[in-house]
Image (tube, rainbow, N blue to C red; front, side, top):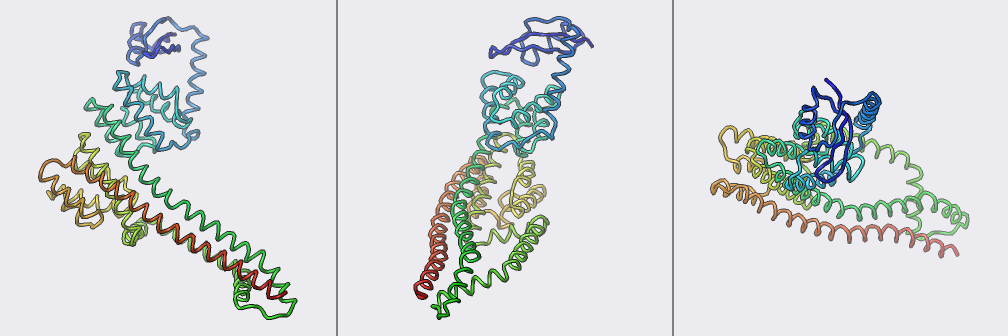
Length: 409
């Protein structure tokens, strides 16, 4: 194998140069054309050019070292999938499209990720195999990309994958946003109350005891609470840490996690939200997979891995086994009592009419809207409750403090 120094240009007009290995100059020219590069100058590489190329590869390998990789955000994966879809639809080949993302990445982690993907694709791997080694790409996206490569509809598949990821992300973010403000407010208020009880009330208790006067019942109860917290606070902290550690072990233990996920689905409002979100996730993802050409059984296998709730995953896995035995999808999913009855009935209608994809899309749209409504209801219920709790705690401490202060004067 000989080495050849080349100067070439991309369809976008960008110029590139480097060293390529090939059996002959004609073979090197064909290799460049396969990579989407238009050769402008091609000649045998000198020793200095070969050394520079080796140094460049060393730097690239260092950058591709998994220890140097950062976490690739889901929103960045969505963006790059949309970019690839647009560029492929416009006529760029895959390597040129990946090069464009590498040149203008949304983050350094994305650049490292796509540098690794490009290296694997150049070495002969399929795009699906290349992205499957990166956790930022969901299993459903990997399967759809593989099918898109086989069918030649890679641009369409990437666009659908990005849309599916965006819908899932928006639902998750809506839930986090609805719970963040009340949770932060409650924790902040509890921190202030604990600080006052531990650091402010004990000196006040000493001053009031020195006066030798009887205290109002409200103030006395606050002083008793402060003494209780100061005396047994370390014990309470140890018990709390023990409970958190025990819960973490139960959560990491698959049977325990399954039990917790099943209990969460039975809670009054939280369970309804989780059930609605899981239904929307299943319907949207399954519609996207089926529309991309993936078989129903394979789609069920993929969905059993992307569900965050283990009970949903167990129901989908059981449904897959029943479908393999000849059962219908609606009957198989309905036995677990995990998804909403509406989806089960609509899936049955879609199977009977042969229009399952459109039916699932309609189910997903309905449950997405329903989920947003439920999240708003949850937020509307939590915020007044938090205001009452925080106001009651802070008000109790301040009133008891000033009542005792005026009573001692």
